[in-house]
Image (cartoon, rainbow, N blue to C red; front, side, top):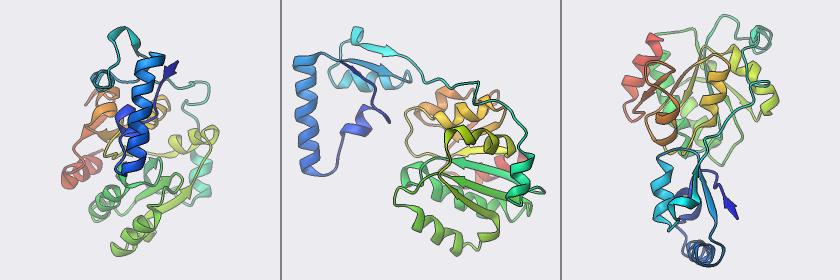
Length: 229
């Protein structure tokens, strides 16, 4: 058996609710005792986490995610930009689930700072709602940012390339992230990226060379970085 848990083993199997956690613990003990599974770690930082679950060194394999460069590559995004009415805009793009863990609320607060200094800035948000969209919409209304935000919804990976290509900057403010595939996709499309200085993004991005990492708790610092870029 090979296990490659999306989001990391601790994120997937640690639950706050008592009953799900009990099921998780029983499942984990069974897997370790009887099946001796092999685990795929997509970042080096994930390896000690998997070890904490009792996996032997020779059962852990470091295999980072890759992207299909036949799909994710620089293309002309000008037609899409015009279709969305953003042809004269400086576009910040977010791609991912609309969830608290993804830090979309922080991105709205950052936009509130950036928009005061750059009236051309637009934030395009792509992703399905994970129950957090009403909160995001409330923040947009609270800061009077409706004219600066375009909510696109879900987009197939086969159509994402054009969105990446039309953007000036991809920002990924996740609170927890084992990997961060969006960053790799954006970089494959030749775009500048800013990611949280946490697990996955900090391994994907060589800060100051292939992109930038920052502490998204410091909204002012990230805002200044975006304005400078």
